[in-house]
Structures are given as structure tokens and as C-alpha cells.
Image 1 (cartoon, helix red, strand yellow):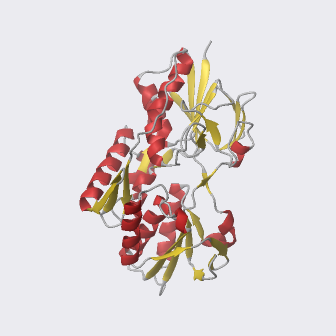
Image 2 (cartoon, rainbow, N blue to C red):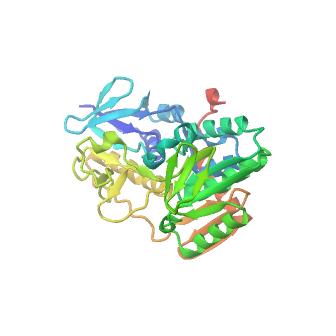
Image 3 (tube, rainbow, N blue to C red):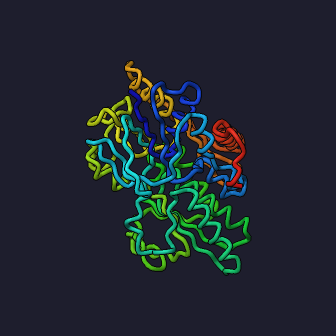
Length: 374
């Protein structure tokens, strides 16, 4: 009897699954990829795009040829609901899709609840394609403005890279801008070693980016800080980390207190064995694992192997992160900070490593020209 295997989301982990199916299709299965867009933007290259190093198309991965090579039907729609008890997905297209085996890599949502009052001034970093479109439009609209005030909220790697990248983008567009970064002190590059934090803070200060160690709440014309200061803003970029999609928290899957689906080391739901998940919508029950694109990419081959093993009835593998991970933080000017364990340094040579890794990753996914995305 044929079984239906559905991939929900075009996240980095699912790229590895599609590649696995292209190499060796799953026997006696119907395969499907459900994603909100035919094109997925590789977020690792976003800082380089801001700095004018990459064109927009350089970031795009076309999922259609990948799905075709994998023998998977491509369905462009948003997931609105999941009923694991009867194994169905509800889509924005109105479709109800049944599945025998499901993998979730839809990505989380940017948590903008504290900034909602900003209205059109608020610019979440996700989805990346929409962020790029809206920021490009803002730079055009503000071409004659005396000053452009940009506030980045969120002190993780994404927030730091965005603050530095936006400052470079303003300079390239000959705009006089003031860029500020708002983050709780304990949230500034948390998870990174002290030397990385020091190098990044020095860079921000030297580049004239004001760092405010505080909480921020959105108001109509800017951001009110927990220390009482007010930052006027033409644009507030939200890099505030992920929150679980509402449909996931309402699905009936066992999730943690924040609504992220609970999985084991094999990336399988602890409550529903026909469902796997990867990326930043999961909570590992066996260890603390930060939500990082690095882990989504590294977990992809394990996810692919376990979907295949489930169909074939063979033992599952585990995703065991390395004790030390290579991190590369773009500084927006063809330099980067590199860290490996407790060791960290910065320079143009570090950017060249990051540039090669990112370009190589995207090129590996490309099987034909982008066509209509050009």
C-alpha cells in the first residue's frame, strides 16, 4: 500500500530531505512539499545583501526544481492547522491534506507582540523575502530625508548583523542615518563566548551604533525603553527571536510551555510517532539546543535518514550536535567575527570563509536557473 509523506515548510532541513529523495526515491510513497512560496531565501546571506555584496536573487533557492527531482508535488500554501489524530493538514488554499508521515520545518514566527503599536513602522525580519522588499522600498522613499532613524530590537546574532548591515546600507544609499540596537544585557549574543560579545560590542560602538541595554515597547512613532528613554524611529526592525506558530500550539502535539513541538534526539514528536520536526519550531527534550540555522542545516541529513528509516522499518538515527560549532558573524563591510569553541577572532579572512560557505550552500541547492524570479 502506498503511503503519503508530506514535508510542511521549505526550511533548511527539508532541503536535505529533497536531496535525499532525488538521490534515491522512497519506494511506494507519494511525496509532497507544502511551502508558502516557491522560493526560499537563505537568511545567512541577508547581511551581505544589506551591505550591497549580494543581489537579491543571490539569496534565493528555487524549490520547484528541487521538488521535481525529488518526485514531490509542490503545493504553495500556508499551513493553518494540524490534526495529528486523523493525520491531516489544513492549508490556506482550503485544502485538507492527509498524510501517513509528516515532517515539519515551517520555521517560527517573529515575536512582535511588544512592538505592535508601531504599525507600518514595524519591520519583522521574517519572512526574509518580505523584509527585503519592504526595506528596499523604505530606502527609496527616504532618499531625500534629512535623517533616517532605524531601531533594531533584538540582541542575538541576527540583531547584531542587521544593525551593522543596515548602517552599511544607509551609507551606500547616501542617507544620513542613526541606527540603534535595543536588547536586554543578558540577551546580547547569549550563547556566544565573552570574546565574541566583546568584539561585536566594540564594532557597534566604533561604527556609531547606539547600544541600549533595555527592554523596548513600541509606540506610534518609536520605541519606549524600560529605562525611560524614547527612540524615535522611521523603521523598527524586529529580530526578537521565534515564537511558535499558533496552529502548532493548538494542534494537540505535545509542546513545551512556549508552544514548540517536543522532539527527541531522533527529531520525532514524543507524542505522535508519525510526525517529525526540525529547525526553530522544536524543543529537544533531551538537551538545550539553541534555535539556529546551523542546527537546522546540520539536522537535515538526520531528518532525511529517519524519514526513510520509518518507511523502511529500520532503526532511527540521532542528531547529536558537535560540542563546538563554527559561528560566523557578518560585520557588514566584508569582515566577520569567527568563533570556534572559546576561540574568536575577526577580519576580512573570516568574511571570505563565510562568503564561500554561504555561496557554496546556495549553489548546491540550485539545479537550474531561477527563471521567473529574475
